[in-house]
Image 1 (cartoon, rainbow, N blue to C red):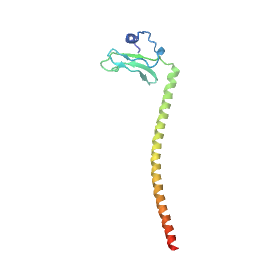
Image 2 (cartoon, one colour):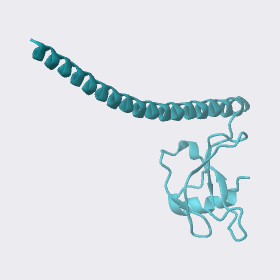
Image 3 (tube, rainbow, N blue to C red):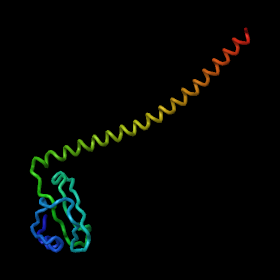
Image 4 (tube, one colour):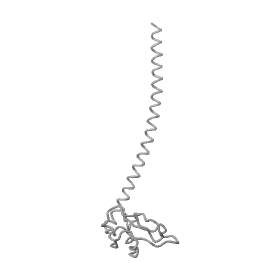
Length: 141
C-alpha cells in the first residue's frame, strides 16, 4: 500500500524525489506527514512483513488522518518471509527461558542466604556445646 504521492513530502525536506531508501545512510532524517506529525520509523513484525520498516501517520487507521503510509524497506523474498518468523519465535522462547532462569537464580540465591543463616545458627549452637563440654571436662580435673 505504498503511496508515491507522499514523495513530495520527502522532496521538500531532502531535495530528492528518488524514493530509493536503501541508498540512504542510517539513521534516516525525520519526516512529517500531511497532518504535520513527525514520522518515526516503525518495524512490522507480522508474518507477511517480518522486520520490514515503514513510515505511517500516527493517526493511521483512525477516523481523521492523512492516510500517509510508506514502506522504508523493499519487500522481502519468500524465503526470508518463511525463515524470519520461525527465528523470531525461537529467539522469543530463548529470551523467555533466560528470564525464567534468572528468576530461578534469584530464588536460589534467597534460599542460599537462608541456609547460610541456618548454618551459622547451628555453628553457634555447636560452639556453645563444645565450650560447655570443655568447661565440664576442666571442672572434673
